[in-house]
Length: 310
Image (cartoon, rainbow, N blue to C red):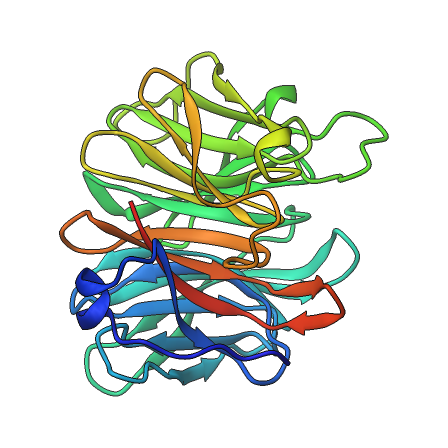
């Protein structure tokens, strides 16, 4: 694997670079998604034996520390905070654009880490992005990339419901990349999502209980010439601008007016290889980007955590 120097986030403000690698797995690990903890640390879901890691970006030499490998799964995807330092995590047995044994776990980091099963979701085919309702975080919405559905799960009771299904969430028939709805976040009164196959960033009005949805409105369509083939997971800043992972090597900013621009990577840049998710760091001046790595110029890049000035 090709490794680059590690730099503490505490030094970033003095650096002219817009991107700084914080961590790179030495063995090949796909980082799929991330979540900020109350202490400012990151949680990382991976496709590596369903392992969940935590990473302190403020450390002089940040390292990914294993929390647990979630039982009955080989890969982890979506993650959302459902209470103070308690998280819902999606895991399953990964196949080719299909998962078996789709399961929603609770991971409690208050004290000794504890993992419990919230619910099995047998009707799912490929669960992906997930978000908790900000006004009711015990309820999560989960995207199914293959079925074009949104599942609602009450994490207290384990009750699972399909609450929305639409072609705008699915991949077109015979799509080269059969992944529809991918990233999912709730901001204001809307559920926002990316559709990787359709190259869209869209929103849907949602009711307070997360059960009733309005019509899909496309906010932006991918400008693939600007540095990527599709859109993945994303995060919002305090003003409602979205920062979207844009594989292969860019982070796109989509303004509230739908205008998009590349804020990091793009072109021939090797600063970010295979971005998968974005978190906005406290203070709103930096974003943390996770990657799955990939092959570039004869090198194999493993999963990274990169700080991007926004």
